[in-house]
Image (cartoon, rainbow, N blue to C red):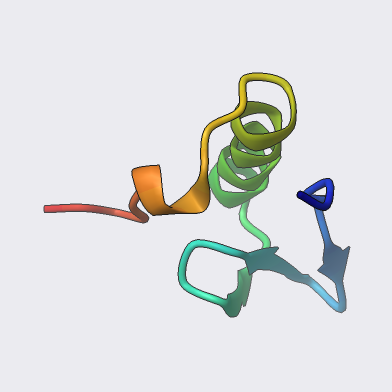
Length: 54
């Protein structure tokens, strides 16, 4: 499995859980970096996570 990388450009951050670029607010930056940690360091898959689940 390829390593998941944090991506930010033009004031937006890429969210692999929903496959979209979102506005790079501080909370969103932390969330996307931590998703990379969960996948790369702890072996979670993106299918095991959700973005803003109600």
